[in-house]
Image (cartoon, rainbow, N blue to C red):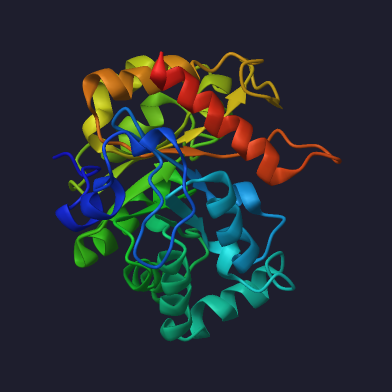
Amino acid sequence: MKMAILTRREAGRLLAMVAGSALTPRLATATMPINSVIRGVQIGAQSYSFRDLPLDGCIDAYRLVGLGECELWEGTLIPPEIVRDAKASRKWRLTVPLKTIAEARQKFERAGVLVYAFNARMDKEMSDEELDRGFRMAQELGAKCITASAKLSMAGRVDKVAQKYKMMVGFHGHDNTNDPDEFSTAETFEQAMKGASKYIGVNLDLGHFVAAGGDPLEFLRRHHERMVTLHLKDRTKNHGPNVAWGEGDVPIVEVLRMLRDERWKIPANIEYEYGRPGLDTVSEVKKCFEYCRKALET
């Protein structure tokens, strides 16, 4: 089941542009979505890339860069003063009016940006009510799927709720290969998918996967139908640091060209993490977007 394929409505919003317009990012009006599809590959961003900005500033950043697809990190919605406070964030998650979440969706839509995925928090300490609430938020945002940094032991529990809402969840991995309950290697993702419903998939972070010793090209060939989104970033092997694109070991160019050539409709989302003091977030994400463009147009 190719869950990452866009619906007709979404495709209309993202692709119904003048032929060739993907070559020139444009700021959107209320009736013109931003088209950041390059050679058939949807390029977007994880809103964590703009974690130094409040919601409205984050939306402006998508417009300034020219990105029309968003994987919305929950932290972008949480009031900045409590985003690092676990107890306060939990209370917010359970009590924030769903109307407020819907209003955030409207802001993105007015800017011409599609919220394709919601990056929900899913930790082992969550109550069933809190876990369910993440799916409700995703619905209000109009998201097609959820991404989550959960533990492997949560997969069955998450699967039950995903089936209830008929919404695919892509588990996100890191490079902590010492923890058997952490998504990190091909084997851990495959363990979660084995015997699970069609609603359990992968949000493959190329940087973390390579840092953990994985081969993203080989993994994509075997499991592309279970991919909800990709995270684009560069890191070095053997648990190395995040680095500017092109300086690490992640085959970003090769992955993007694979999506293009195989025509796999998997959104590829920039996740800017190599920043250091003095760098401008929007400028750096623009560089990443241009990197994607050059890779896909050659």
